[in-house]
Amino acid sequence: MPLNRRKFLKKSAATGAGVAVAGAAAAPATAAETAKGPGPAKRYSFTVMGTTDLHGNIFNWDYFKDTEYTDAKGNAKGLARIATLVEQVREEKGRRNTLLLDAGDTIQGTPLTYYYAKVDPITAEGGPVHPMAQAMNAIGYDAVALGNHEFNYGIETLRAFEEQCDFPLLGANAVDAKTLRPAFPPYFMKTFKVPGLPPVKVAVLGLTNPGIAIWDKAYVQGKLAFPGLVEQAAKWVPKLRSMGADVVVVSAHSGSSGTSSWGDQLPYVENAAADVARQVPGIDAILVGHAHVEIEELLVTNEKTGRTVVLSEPLCYAERLTLFDFELVFRKGRWHVESVRASLRNSNTVEDHPYIGRLLDDEHAKVVAYVNQVVGTATETLTTVDARYRDAPIIDLITKVQEDVVRAALAGTEHAALPVLAQASPFSRTSEIPAGDVTIRDLSGLYVYDNTLVAKLMTGAQLRAYLEYSAEYFVRTAAGAPVDVDKLTNAGGRPDYNYDYVSGLTYDIDIAQPAGSRIRNLRHGGAPLDDAQRFVLAVNNYRANGGGAFPHVASAPELWAESTEIRTRIAEWVTAKGVLDPKDFASEDWKLTRDGTPVF
Image (cartoon, rainbow, N blue to C red):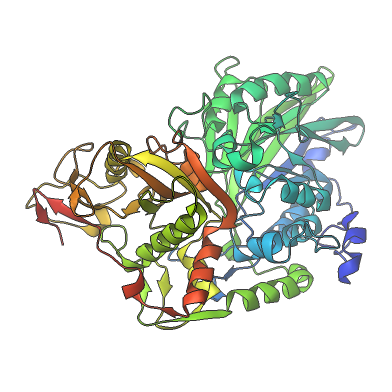
C-alpha cells in the first residue's frame, strides 16, 4: 500500500481525516540481497531519496495566477507529485530498502504557507496542523534539514511545526547562542536489516545555512547561532562513524558553488556543500539545497582520503526527486560503500497522488478563497514586464507604501522631520495588477517574499554608494551599441531581487560607464544630493540585515522595525484607498543613459 501511517494519525484526528494508508508490505529480497551461492548475502543495496526547497508547494497550483502551474520547460511541482514518485521507488526497491530526506526551506514560499503562519496560524491554541506536516508525514519522510526560510515566521512557529512532524528537523549547526549546544537534533540514524548479516547503519547529518544569522536576525539574535557547515561537519562526522555508522549522508541547506551573498559579514560560506565534501572525510553523499538549481550528480574528491563524494540537488518546489543508489559489500567484518550513483526523477512524469488530494483539498480551497478576495479597483493595468530596466509604476507602489508606513511609525519621534526614502526590487518579471478588481492574489504576486519593513538612518554619501552597488546589475553597454533588454541586466549573475530602486531621489544610471561610476545627476528635492544630509531609508528586512551585501545598510542605525509583512501593508494600503490610481504613487525617479543620452 502506498503511503505511510505513522503516529501523526492521532495528531490529525481533530481534522476528521486519517493520515493515510499503511506502510508498504515487505518486498521480496532484492537481487543484491541474495547470495550468488549458498550462505548469506555479501552485498546490500539501498536508495536514499531526496527533495529540497519545497517552499510550501503541495499541489501543482499557482496561487498567484489562480490556475494550474506551468512553465516554459513543462515542469510540474508539488508534494502530491513527489508522493507518486516515492511510491514508485518504494515499489521498485522495496520500502525497507529506502530512506526519504529533504534539505530544507519547507514552511515559507506560497500563500498556503503564509495562511497557516499568519491568517489561521498553527501557533494558536487548538490551531490547525500545518499542511506541509500533514503531507510530509503521510508520504513518510525520515528526516528534514532546516532551511533558512524555516525561521521567517519566528522560532515559535518553527517549533510548532516541529512538534507536528513525525520526523526530526535536523540542524547540527543551529546551536543555542549561549551554550553552543545543538538546538535541534544534529543527526538521524536509520538501521537497515540484512538477512544473515549485521545490519547497515546509515547516519544522516543535517546542516543549515549560516546566513540565518543575517536574514532573520530579528528572530534569532541572542537566541541561536549558526556556525559554518564545514566546521560542524568536521565535528559530527567522526562522531557518527564512532557510533557505528556504515554510511554517512549529509542533508545540507547550502548550495555547492562556494559563494556567499552577504559579502564579508560572516566568516562562513553560504553555499558550502562542495567544500564540506572536499574538506571533511567520511561522507558518502550530500543532498544539496538552497540554490534552486538542478544538479543530477556532482562528484567531489575528498582532499584527505581521495574518496569520491556524490552530490545531488533536485530542482526546487518538488519539481524533481533525487535518488542516491548505494551498493555496499560486506568484507572483513564490516560494511563498505562500493558505489554511489545519483539520478533524478521528474515530477512532470506522474500525476498527483490521490491520497494527498483527499487529505488537503480543504486547506487548499481555503487558501484559494483567501487570495481571491477583492480589496480594491485599479484604474489601469500595472505590470513588472520591463521593471528591471525602466522605472515602473508598479514598483513605485511598493516604495510609496513603505514610505507611508515608516513616516507614520516615526511621527512624533526625533527623526520625524527627516526625509523618508524607500527601496524596492523587481522580484518578478511577470507580475500584473489588471485594470478592474484587485485581489490579494494580485498583490501577493507583486511581492512574493514574506519580508518585513525596517527603517534605517543613512547619509547621502552612503546612499550614493548604495546606488552605485545596485547599478552593477546592468551589463556595461557602449554608447551606440545595440541594446538587447534580455542581455542588459543580471551582470555577474546578480538576480533581479538584488537590484534596488530608491524612491525620493532622482538619478541617471549611465551603463556606458564602468561599475562604480554610473550614478549621475543624483538629486534630492531638485538639488544635488548633499553627502552629509541624513535620510531614513525604508528597507525590507532581508536587505536591512545584509542580504545582497549592499554597502552601509546592515551597519546603519535602526530606527524602527515591525513584524507585519510588506505584502500585508500593500494590501492594507490598497484597501484603504479603494482605488489604485498611478497618480497617487507613481513617479519617474531614475532612467538608464549612455554618455548622458537616455537608453529608452
